[in-house]
Length: 273
Image 1: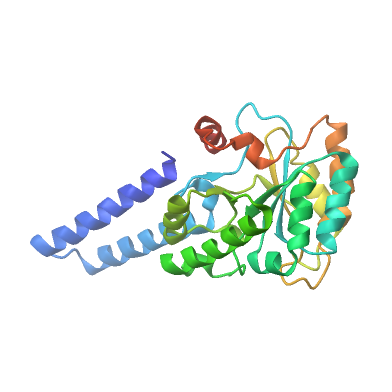
Image 2: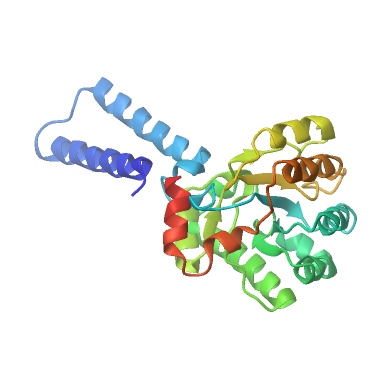
């Protein structure tokens, strides 16, 4: 079990013990109660924001210990212009990647989803609407949105997606509860290009990614702008990233090829690593 989850369970048990003591014996001093409350809220907030600690759900941020190559992942698509540009660049390099798609964009551009699959890449889900407050939503709302995007991708591709990257990368207890029931595997990253804003430059994105290239790395980039209002810098950065990986004799892998349906050992290695 991840250390962060153990800490959360211990903190929760301590809070329950404090409440029981207050009911059957005497309430603690006010300052103790306030400090305990703020400490617990702070711990939960850290667990939500830093999902890589796997406080509420297992999150894969690296490939298994024996992984070879790098996993390029792309968020916020599909887009009929920028996603296709990235697919062309990947084809030229003979590289495979994983695309975490937004449901309403899949509705608008199902042909791009089909292109991703036909060209040999993996599809994961990134929510239906890319709700930036997704981590605050109740379980029923989380389930509704994830059912929408999973069902839509399955309808388009004929295969049910099982890889999930939460919007903004945050995982709350509600999200964790739902993805366990839906048997979705949460995927994080070990490095990112910070290319999801209009002021990003291709040179800066390439530098950030290239210095983190290594076997088992999961790189987070964007194949589309969240609102579709600019071309992400990843399009210009990708040729340099691909060339740097070739120079280092690093291949490119789909995330699902490292995990494999039912590959619990690979998932545990990825988490522990």
